[in-house]
Length: 223
Picture 1: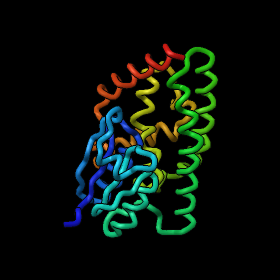
Picture 2: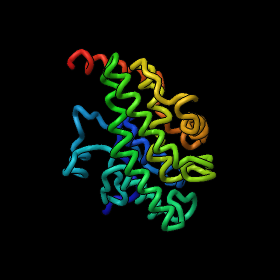
Picture 3: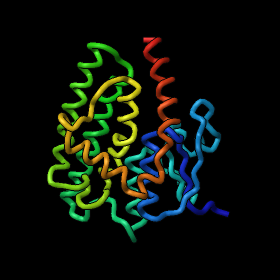
């Protein structure tokens, strides 16, 4: 008998996996969640994603889809009723994909060094990250969310910034998203995290903080 339903393979602290949960929750899709131990990946995960062997993986009626940005679009396309994630207008869809790719390729890469640097080196990478986020912030001008009046595709893709970046700031001692440097982004953090469907899927902050403190100490000491 063919497998039916939706299953998500993720990891509780993964900012990429939470995108999938946000998309499913906003669309009203019921799913089973499987929390992976990334140090000892399950046979099922490796079977469903033999190419990259990474989370998240969405399994829909036995068919696996990998890569979070692709999964979010798939969820929107296969659950057409209810909450729309992607804009209806083709130009606006293209813009959402453009900014999502910019955030993935540029901003994510700019943020990681903050986590593993100290002193003058950290101040330099903080500045670089802020410049990248300022560029992304232009997509927010005149809007409540990146998606307009409600959370959309781009909000889901960059939404992890709102919960994870303050943790990174606390762990590293850096100040990245401030009212002075990134006022639109800072205000969006608060609005995004106040959305019930978003808030309900967030990992516990204290647990996330402890994990990242330990990870930073390990990485900095071995650098």
